[in-house]
Image 1 (cartoon, rainbow, N blue to C red):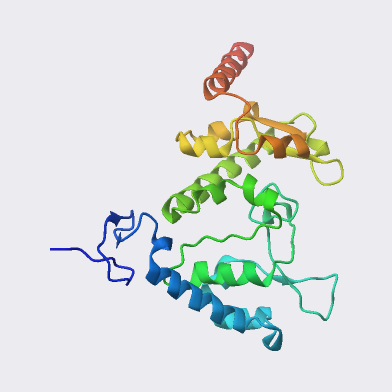
Image 2 (image 1 turned 90 degrees about the vertical axis):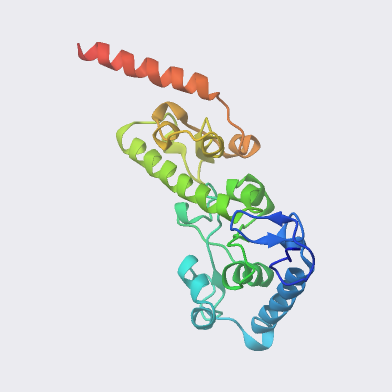
Length: 251
């Protein structure tokens, strides 16, 4: 018996995804039914946030409950009275990210795409907010956008890795850490990246270890992107040596 695509196009299903659904194409976004449905939904969303029907945070809270739960919003304090909606950039190293208490104003297109990703039945919890193309390309989550299951797993891993990192920052002094931030243009960097740690199933405590942390110029960090500046083998060797040295000093 021929198995049909579960996304509604009526064609023969050839690929099964991790969520158990069968599709006619290698990507559900390539299914004609989903493309058509997605386009219609985006058009309706654009109409909702058109000039004649100005979108406000209050309206979003009524129309898009899932979005409201997932995304933090505010009105631009520099433009009182205009009700210009602002959100956080998803790239955690960006000055406009939630991690750095930053905000930026998204375009109407960005809002409608994020609404679709979260609220529509064919959405995949993607289309995160990025304040620039550079942030989008440097964010690990962007590279997992084709598989929402991997995306969610990475988010969990990323949060725990940064939790371990923040614990380390409270105990150890990282060289040049006082230069971190927009004023001096330095950023905290994981030498062996969170991205590589996730791919290779490395314990988050290793990713957040002080031997894996350094504070470097933002430009240098941006060029590095998601590439590690140290091998896992070398990092583990340094951590092991540090552990042995501390134990000897105690004796």
